[in-house]
Length: 139
Image (tube, rainbow, N blue to C red; front, top):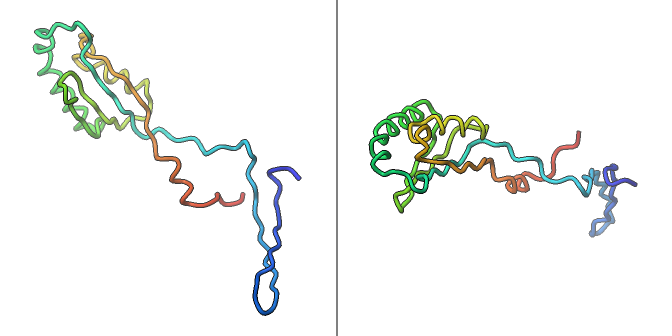
């Protein structure tokens, strides 16, 4: 029997009269892992470029804020935060393609001036929650 074969399982239940319960199950291959996690958001951590001229940064900042607000109002930024040490930002982006996210962030005024860089992390649903749903239906 291969690991993907259908299996019938006979179980005798206790009681006055023995009853037979037949269960039909399908085993998954031992090498089959969880389904891939789809990217639903991008976590973008932006930090001021080391050695950046703070005077230049202050001059560009008003344009950066306006451009960032436009991205928020366009639905591209879902959440935004500042780092508590004051040297960067954290965005949760409503973007699924890291390349598109990078291009969007590099087009912001601080990105164009090379005064801020972003580290991007794709995010998706918490895959272990699938275990709460039970085994997938048989095809």
